[in-house]
Structures are given as C-alpha cells and as structure tokens.
Image (cartoon, rainbow, N blue to C red; front, top):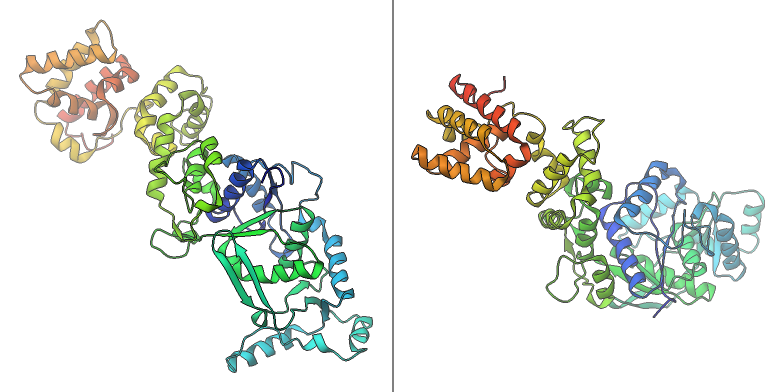
Length: 493
C-alpha cells in the first residue's frame, strides 16, 4: 500500500465532535500518514432537520486543534469534491435512477401510517419488523399511475433473496449475514435527498476510498452497503470496525458519563498533543510498553493488526497523568500564550497583561511540572499574583503556633537584609535561622509557605520565594504574623 490508500472521516454536523468520533478520525489519519496516503474530510449533512451550523464549525475547530489536518475536503479542496453531501444531491438522484432502470431498486408509495401499522402487526406476531416489500410487487401499471398522480414515494433497494452476504473485517475477521434478515432499505427519501446508506456508498466510490474505518455500530449496515456496491457493479473498500469506547464504569459513553466533546477537553486545560496520544492508545497498541509517543512515532508504528476488537475504557485519570507528562516536557515558550490567556480569563492577571512578561515565564516554569492540566496550573498559581486572602485552616492550626509570629518576623528581617535572593542563598538563611532558633528547618519552612501562599503544598519553598521576590515575601510574612496574633489566620479580612 502507498499513495493508493485513501481514507475518510465523515461526521454529521448534528452535534459536537465527541471522543469516539475523534478517535475514529485519528485512526484514519494515522493510517493515511503511515501509508503516505490521503486523509479526506467529508461532511454528511443530508439530515437537514438536525443540521447545526455551530456544530459544523466546532467539528472543524476540534480537528484543527488536535492537529488532524485533512488533505482533501472543505476548506482544503480536492479533485473529488464537493465534500459536503448537501452539495451532491443531483449525483445521488442519478445513481438511484440507475438502480431503478436496472430493476435493482423500486419506488415505495407506502404512507407512514401504513408502515407504522405493519411494524406493530409484526411486533405482535414476534416477527422481524422489516418492511414487508408491499410495493416491490405492485401490479404492472399501478406504480406508474401513483407516480403520475404525484403520490409521495421513496426509493428502496431490492435486497436479493437466498443470499449470504459476507465480508472480511480487518479487525474482526470474517462476518456473514443472511440476506433474508436485511430490510429493503430506503435509498432516496420522499424529499429527494439520499439516506446515509446511498450517499455513503456513492461518495466512497467516487472519492476512491480504499479503506473504511468506522465505529462497530455500523457493522450491521455493512452487508447492505456491500449489496449496494454489487448493484452498481463497484468493488467495495476494505472495512474495519473500531472497538467501542466505554465509560469508566463500563457502560456506554454518554455526555453524563464522560463522552465530552473535544472542545470540552480544550476548555478543561488539556494539551492537544496529550489528547491525541491518549486517543491513539484507545484500542491500539504499538506492540511494546510505550505510552507517551510523539506523533511521528505513532505514525510509524500504526497498523490495523494492532487494533484490538475489544472495547476500550475511557480512563480520565490516565489522560490527566499523560497530560501532566506533556506539560512537564513542554517548553515555557510553547505554553506561555495559552497559559497567560487562561490567567486573564480567570482574572488572575489583568486583560492588558503581556505574555512576554518575564515574571510569567518564571511562574510557568516553576508550576508546569507540578500540574496535570492548565486549569490546575491556573488555580494553583493564583498566589503568585495576589496576597492570600485566607490560610488553609488545617495547616494553620498545625503551623501557626504561638511562636509563629515571632519566627516569621525574625525571618522576614533576615530576608530583608539578605545580600541576594536566589534559592540557594535563601536555603542557607533558613538553615542558619533554624539553628539559631533551636528548631528544625521544617518549623520555619511550613509557616513560611503558608504565610506567603495560603496553602500547605506547592513547589520547593526556596524556588517559590525566589520567584515571588523579596518585597512580596517580606510583606506577606509580616502580614501573616499580624493576622495570627489577631486570631484571623483562617479567615479573609
């Protein structure tokens, strides 16, 4: 396989791009890049009643943010366009007419009421609820009369009798269906627009799609699609149905159970590289112990043989862990624009703040290794920009003892007089002060951390003090000493 590989991701713009859809797009992308093929984006918008312009814009934004740039499709062009199905309606009608002429499809004039009645009767009889093929065998001129009178109708595929339809799924192996259980599916609706099935097959053929990767919920549709390919005399593509993604509790993903949109993860402070890596490993493994992989490594290693048919579980703790690794490895410059925007949105810094402020770079450098997400980094960095309004209550009871004001003030004076304020010098001062006061270094370090940050956790104290700066540190220590004496250590003023 080489440049003959052509794959497509074909979302319907009826809602956001969720994790399952993003994983499907990503596997198509990796396969195309591995084989130096073509990755196509096609918009399947024939369901006009559910079309959502905002959802379409979010699909484009989500794919771009993840770095899933398409070679052909909307906004990219290509010789097989247009790549939006609502702009290809004439092509679908032409192909439906071709099947009518060859006798492989027929017009169905059944009303919705009749179809509902037949379905209910079959349910009561515990029989398959498929269409009863009433219009498939209309007497000679009856169909012509109904057509001439303008009776609304659809066009159905005439599923052949006595057939076994089989195909080899590249992930699940050989699959067979008895054609007798297949419905005479609708190809063209009464409004002249195609169903998913007709448009999908016609487009995949004309866009020369070599491999179709989609979720396993489409397995039951595949025999129908194969029969459509046969009716047209076209060779079908290779099919591969991807494993389902389960919620952490083992149930089906839903919005409530973690089926967030790609943009939800962006808004949650995740990095696109981390989400890309995480999604790649949902159902696929490189065959070794690697988990954090660069995009070129994933492209090089990707193969269908290593995609498991078993369901995958969406483990958001693992995603957060992986995102933390990517934050650690990211350069300050690559994060600066995004992080400062988060700080502005959270009101941590003013809207006029410039991302090139050297203080910002120091804060990001200190905090990125200790954060799982940019949201966490933003929350935990607030004390770099504002004095704490209160102190962590449990820590205050433990570390703001009777001697705390005296020790904090003594330390503050020593820091005011220190010839330099780098972390190495600060550590020396604290060791010397502890020895002079006859206490362990921890008895000074913990109250100081609480005084200057309001919390009992964070980066190394001396690196933290260096970034905060002498003036801020001394002011906060004196303020904490005063508040402890007044008994206000747990409360905002």
